[in-house]
Picture 1 (cartoon, rainbow, N blue to C red):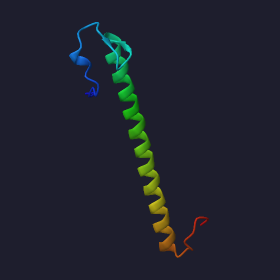
Picture 2 (picture 1 turned 90 degrees about the vertical axis):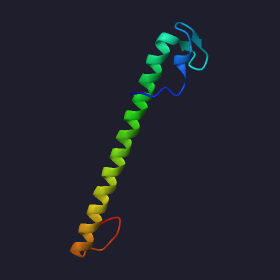
Picture 3 (picture 1 turned 180 degrees about the horizontal axis):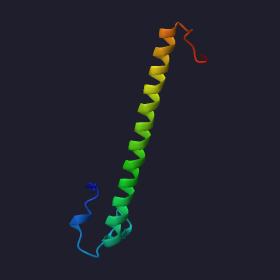
Picture 4 (picture 1 turned 120 degrees about the vertical axis):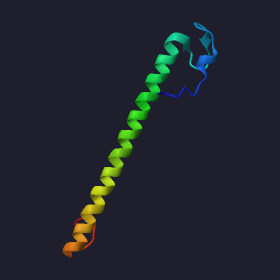
Length: 74
């Protein structure tokens, strides 16, 4: 369920929404698509960052366990 931050529902059908600068019928679909796309992008970026951090942590732990020098080039 996509939350509408701009209260489009309070306008009448076919009414012009100056906040969206598009007509009501298309405005809700466009707004929901934008929100959904930004949500997908944000979640994928967050997942990528978390996985990258976990990989770096595991690599550093295995390096220290093997007694290798701790540095960016190892």
